[in-house]
Image (cartoon, rainbow, N blue to C red; front, side):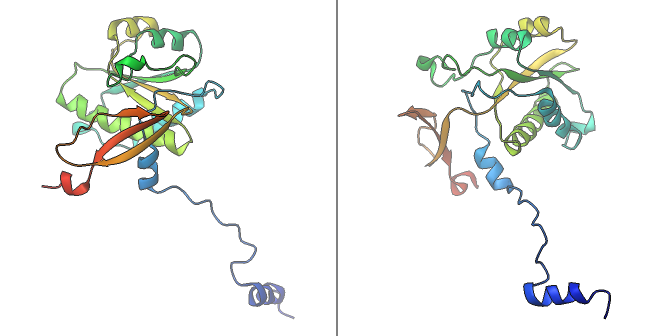
Length: 212
């Protein structure tokens, strides 16, 4: 009897793929983008760990950089006194000032503070957009969410964290505690985001409206 008789017989009866574990299906880019929303409320029952922030920062070694100068630096901040300090100097929900977001008890408790080693310029802003999008996509892949914050007090944040360079953005990270839906819009429509019955709605132009 051939050494592999039982293996061949098993395949004949059950199929070649029988017994093989299927690799977990990874979310598509479209799925990640759909869930990559600007969350302004987080579940404080979930604690973001340093290793998770490090994994998000690590994507920056794989993304594009203007003239490949790689002039951004990253400071992870986990739950604790430093996060409390950062929360004092950030502002969110500028489009909904009457809500005074975030709601009490939903403040972010983990951050990635992005700094530039040179004065802010157009190239830095391009790099910043690429970096922040990549890190938030990584957060979504990990089951988390984020909020890109540029409306913050730079010097107090720099002093609170002892940063050697000027911060140019703060990325809040956590487990989302709010529902966000995209709604179709067309050129000329009001594109301001809004809330209704606890749902945050974000109008988005169609591909046809975006294409020249």
